[in-house]
Image (tube, rainbow, N blue to C red):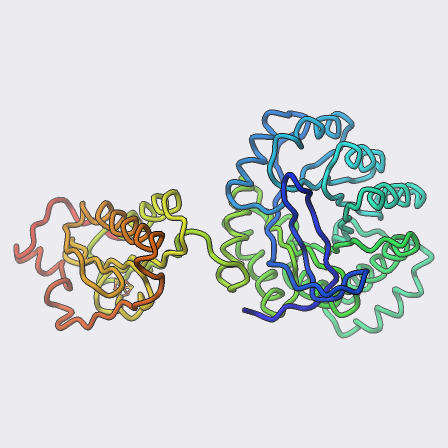
Length: 431
Ligand code: SF4
């Protein structure tokens, strides 16, 4: 497990939806020790909150995908009114996202929301921010303070501190922005501390992955509140995934970050799936469901592996609940080494697939039967695991091919020589 930076701990949720802890490692206000909670995954609904049926459906979809916490926007009173109907119908803690209108925060608290996301910089009257803090304090609700790049604004009375920090960060590519972020955060936190309010999470998002890394790194040095990591406006999933993983992965590897939101201009289910996968890959969460590895294919491939991998992924995602490691490999030349540690593995070649379960060869089937047989073997092994008759990861795939060109390899030549039945034109790779 990667080491985690100690922070205060906050809790989001209640008896009915469950409590999600964020951060930890420092003593709580009563001096009791806390241990860092697993890094949680958040997302945000994409639809209108006032459309109650659609919002409930979306929240439940996101929770089913694995979201620990779901945020909803509440720009209008009809949205906070809708929360009263939405909250009893969902099973996951809900955060109200408030911008500009402090009344929305007060209404959301009254409706029973579990956390408020607030950017004090876009609520002009400090007394209004204090009203929100007091309302949350009375209900024991945490608040996330955002100093995202796009929403921090300059204030004349903070010019001196910014200048000082600007000098601290003068060698830094993002020095000026970092100085503003830190200055704003100090300013906002003072408002909360004056109210003796400490159930705070902090976010400092940007669309610039390098700035995100720098901003959170500097904030983690200066403050001990749990950090909500994210890259804002990351773009479509195809490019946003890289942008997000570059920033969040770098921070998490260094122990920074207690809850994450990956944001895409796409279905937020992808945000949840990719957020979880990032945490699984870093060993920061215990994997639920299949761990699929597959080769990228190369000139040795003799089956339509890309289609097979996608079919396996979709089917196993629905049916496997234990962290079963499955390898789908294009051939036996490099496959065994690369599939080492897999519980179930298939090695393809000559339009056939040889299937292994924890090192034991169980089948050699033609290409059209690979998918069904592989799924059957995965489910049968899962049953054995659930009955306590087998253990995940107990035995490694251990195959030493006697002749890579023999039983499986070099199928194109064999097909050409008529030594292997060729049922259809060979489709390889990205068809
Ligand atoms: S497993 Fe075989 S087909 Fe796949 S990339 Fe490696 S050598 Fe190529």
